[in-house]
Image (cartoon, rainbow, N blue to C red; front, side, top):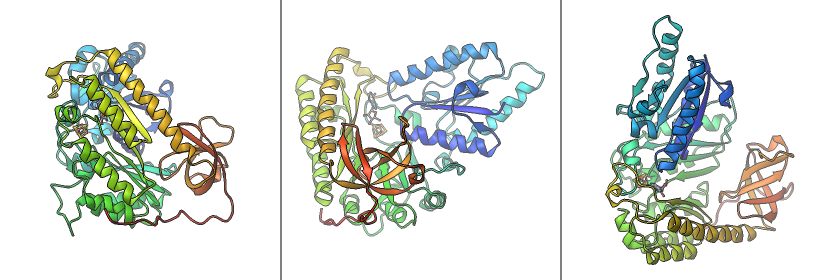
Length: 464
Ligand code: 5AD
Ligand code: SF4
């Protein structure tokens, strides 16, 4: 009864939560397996951001329930955002669920599981499903365990939970609750331990990461708590690259922009959600910035780091988005020249302020707008990768590529995926690679074995 498979839907925050649950379960003697057939327990860590993500997880749970009917000792749990959003109502549809665990209760999974197993192994009736969805003070401090028995070249570190923004389309404030920051000292201890175990790169995670600690901790020398945290992470020996996701344009102030000029470990890559290029739609989305302000921030960043790579999130088909609104999104999307983007078709979410607006933009219109942006993105991404052919960049190797054939996968500081014929010994190493071929998504190249210095420190201006 101790083999657990965790399937994760959704964002990097969910990936991190699943990883922490896996580490906690390992600590209690469970083994984490990588396919559901071998598992005695399957936990689905779910996403609610779009209806489709919820339907996928519900479908999966329904499928697993068939197995449970044949094997009553098989355990099915649903954790995370959809558990929080739908709560015990899930049991009406999926009465076979054993566990429903909310976003502030991940750390309770090991106890709930062992109670469930103990009851199952007793003689009594089938145990009741466990539903644990309460808010819990300081739950943000519980997502800290990492597995130390495998090398994590690149690691996610959750620095806060929740979101106080009120974007009208978004369910996250409901599923994740209000913003709560972890203490800086605990985050630094966690990253030092990761570094001691061989981690070279960290991604600091939060729903609105640049707002980290804004209510809990003071500004020091006009630097926000997030900038203070970046400085502290920067000092950690062994960590060579710092990423974070996702920031909000509100609160993306000069103190943070300047970091790109003076903290060389901060990579020249930023995920920066734009959502729409129309001020009218941004307002309806309750995104409190204009497209001009958004572009001004990007302009300043590019002054400080001309080689900046920028990715974004866009929603097409928000209620009331006209052809003219979309044309603005298209134009700004093209002019900014995003290197990567996550494009979403609007999905109505329960209890959001946009819910009463319905879903008037047709599926076909959304599809068409989505495709237009996808085509632009493919061109832009390919063009950026092609500029790299013949150049050399430092690549952090993460592991073998799925394709096999002695191919290994790494990333440039700008987050471009690189595939190179290499050897296992390069995993966890930062190695210069000369690129000789590019697609929109991938760079191919060969190792440069001699005459290249260590990862170059940026020589950049600090004026913003
Ligand atoms: N419909 C479509 N996309 C959404 N997102 C958030 N809520 C919705 C929704 N209701 C997108 C936003 C956000 C990303 C994580 O998901 O672009 O930045
Ligand atoms: Fe959702 Fe907006 Fe918060 Fe992001 S900032 S999690 S889109 S409410």
